[in-house]
Length: 408
Image (cartoon, rainbow, N blue to C red; front, side, top):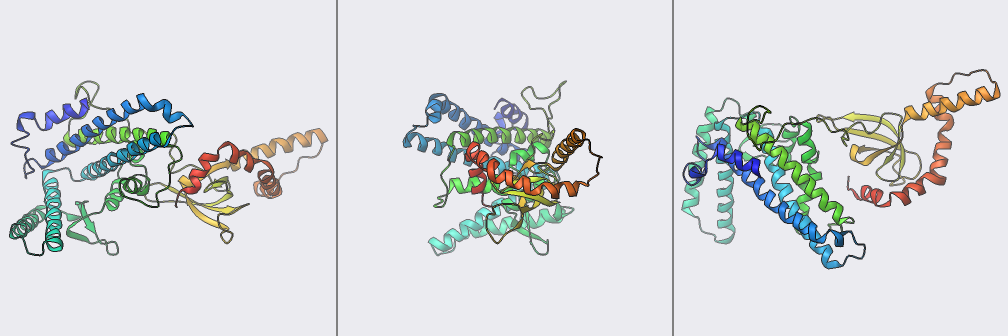
């Protein structure tokens, strides 16, 4: 909150808030946009302060297995409140990431005009649906905004840089006057996002935006949250991560970048190193044995990497299957966990084979890795059926139940 307040003062001094920054204009559009971002960051900070006070008074009750329904509902209400800020900060961050490619006043002004146009077009529909008669004031505002948009678009060198414009999914053609969806914006942002930002955003559209949308709307098929305290902690962590990422981008877009020599006193340092536990890649290699979509033992047959560097795994089920008619399937990295990597498996076999040959004084025999895997596959599956499956089911029941419930 101190960082955002300090940056706000540099961008929009308090004595100019009611004059220069009363609304957006051609000259202040960039700073006006960042002003709105930083206000949302501060509001999230106030909300997190309330959540912390709740935890300080209710944490013991939340950990108590005999917790009553009132405590549960209170915790759920806070999780729903977290969803509002997760979604807002998600939208703010994706917009900032995308503006990095066109960080000039003309594009910000164009963006605001389109937002204004969408607002008045919605009011026009409201008038039509509920009050029938045409409102001339709103019609005139729409006409003025369209004229301004046409003027600005003639000055912009390349409309394809306008990430906020909707694109036709089939042709890829820019649709002037139509705003891109949150999904389209995220897809654009992920292509240029830093590692920290991808983590903050939750890597995919469903992991943050769609899930939080389901939380803040009435959702009759929403499942109960089995671990309320864990979900609450996650919401705190993601809001914190989104705040830091938004502040970093605001500093970069504004040019007020923190350095150890000079810069904002309360700014945040850019530490966009890749995560050591990235859940989107490096989970397994071809030939590895994995737990696929829960407690389903499978072998990895193929791996594909998309434009964002995320991996998908084609697996072959070796025991039970989610559906009897499906023996192979493609799964996202989130739904795959390593059970036995091929390299370690082969090394263990080599060590045991060497030991046996030495004890029995046998001549060394060379086997290919494929021959070793084929010869021991039945044993691996049998050990899984007799012991490991039940052990994992009992030891990590909640974890695997959660993975199984994910609707991929």
